[in-house]
Image 1 (cartoon, rainbow, N blue to C red):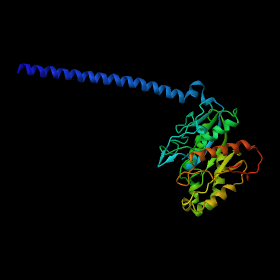
Image 2: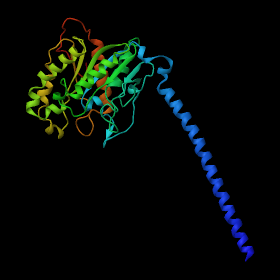
Image 3: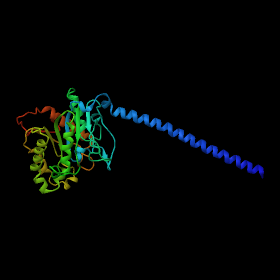
Image 4: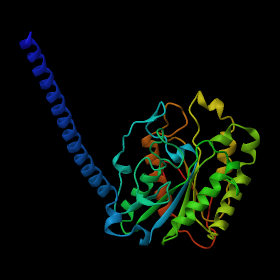
Length: 316
């Protein structure tokens, strides 16, 4: 009996020591993991903020572009079932030394896809035209300078939302003004908008007057009366989805008929779209970004009005 009790005591003590040893091993493993994690965070932070550690982004003479509009400008390339596939083609890769993004927290950081993340959409934000546009500019003009992209798109917003006093417009003005705080020049606005206004006859009919007012107010509030604006002319939705957007013809014509100085148009018609029939695919966004870059570089913006009836198509 005593032997049995002694064996139980030995086993109990052994199990206790084993438990303590296991806890110590677990703590050691957790400590090692924490060290590796901190090291990874430091390395990750260094890679993504390399430009910031080497030279102040605030003092760079940035060439700034504002990106505004709806979900196609925000970027839905590669988004399926509300989830982005995470694929970033070569044309959309980050360029740490030359392309920056104004984050939602109003800080300059190295630009990367999804460019509009947290400004409008979270998990379902995908590839837009912005990174392809910036990379195409730098490919053709290596000495163009550091490009600062200011994403301001808001999905599902009709043209009525982009007037003074409404949040999308006021946020755009606020972010644009902040982008100039430590130096730089706003070189243009990239505007991809209008899908929501094709659903209703009334909003489609007054789209032209309202978008012209938007551009005029924007130029006035930014004290840039001839700010270049690249307007994307809407693509026709694929069937059967086109039945939902009955007045796309009216909005397309309104966009083509904008008669203001330093406004050029890029026609998105024919670019590939996702299965929803409306949003551009990743490749479609790359093509659009290249078209906008070409249109910008080809146009000699000036103080006098030029022919704003020039429209860039896929083959331009």
